[in-house]
Length: 296
Ligand SMILES: Cc1ncc(COP(=O)(O)O)c(C=O)c1O
Image 1 (cartoon, rainbow, N blue to C red):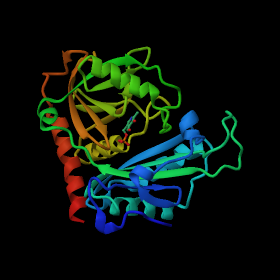
Image 2 (spheres, rainbow, N blue to C red):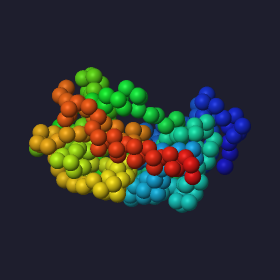
Image 3 (cartoon, rainbow, N blue to C red):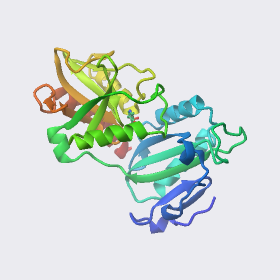
């Protein structure tokens, strides 16, 4: 394994990526133009938060990565223990104390044809970027959302790198001056966001769409449900709509946002239009779990 960026040269201008066996300076980090990730979006990915060198729920993230690989019939490029070491080393070689580590696996490079030879070596890349935090304004006022009828594929449980529909959703949200687009099914049930899960508080219970092929099983979603159950908050995983009576709060969850209130949807206030108490409580519990990691 070679490296062009010694640990002593860590700075935000000097980032290091792992690509197929080597740690290289980010500006030199490339894959073949016939990589199937580039040609077909034939790959899967993960994003893990790292707090001061400790990974938040790395086990469930790697479980999901293995499930995504198995679903598209791509072998994991290395043993799990080695992948954990590479992820830790990528964090270590980059300057961000709190980082989001991006791991992408594609089927590999081959002359372009839909059916791939079964002899390919999967491509593995790992990068580290500063863990973004929601702005103070977003935390104080909440995020805004729009709804769009879901036009994605029918395997949203796979964390695929094919994110065109999500990009189109985000662009539409941006055009409407909103933060996130939330997908609904033909009956108006709210499924998830372009890059987030969504949970509602209905009659005091935390409600979110059940895990099926229409949603990604967000690691932050499941952490939030666990924290809620431990705090004695009733949880219901069932289809739900925005016009249910008793709906008082909405919140989105993701690795990069933790738990964030959603206070308007399609230009209308959710509940009283302010971040709600249960959302605040769950965000605090999530941040406390992250701070525990920092102290570990
Ligand atoms: C479609 C979708 N749903 C949910 C999530 C949230 O998942 P996690 O909490 O594991 O970051 C993501 C994250 O990228 C996503 O792309």
